[in-house]
Image (cartoon, rainbow, N blue to C red; front, side, top):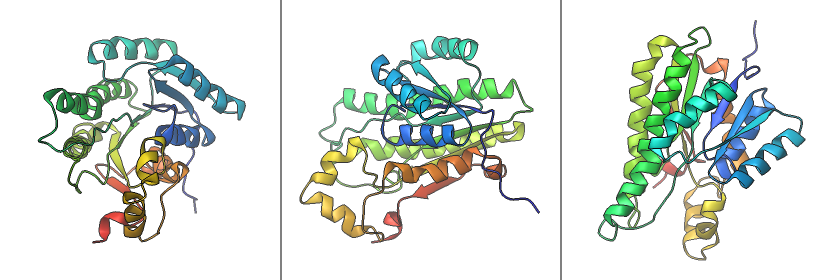
Length: 257
């Protein structure tokens, strides 16, 4: 008999947008599970601070200062990362932005920015990461993408974000089919209402905040650390036969009406 293996020992994990919020929580969980994590962000000071916090806890971390949405610079920067740090065994596509506007109020720039950051950048980086993973087939690989329950679910005044996130769900499926035969799995995590920095204003809203809590069967916002179990599972050997799946972590929010 063998216990499930959730160890990430000797793995190199890149988590985009990981200086705070869910990305940082995932990076911390990976580091505590034995991986060397690569902290990514655009601000060198914030990247260095996050790396220092993880190292001070006795775990392994490196930094990668790069704007993921800069597609022109992404390839060269990723190639440099592979030379300087190594080829990631695990990629977590976490970077995202949200401009809450109706479609009628959204400008072409709003639409382009949302699609570029939330969807196109993840597609491009996944392509680069998969190529590196395929170069060492004995290792396999994991591509994990943060989608959202705001993909299958939409609400007034927030038009573009669900479109981009549902696109990511399609990307998860496409990558699973294309790279699964080579030992690289692709899965997603669809978070619900987490009490992150980006949701602080919504959580504090005296009208909308209680509505969100009231709809959730668990009756509360999730803490960022509660994403960790799903992220570690999908990256671990125990998820070796999980491919093309989006794991919802929302306390039951999306099954209520």
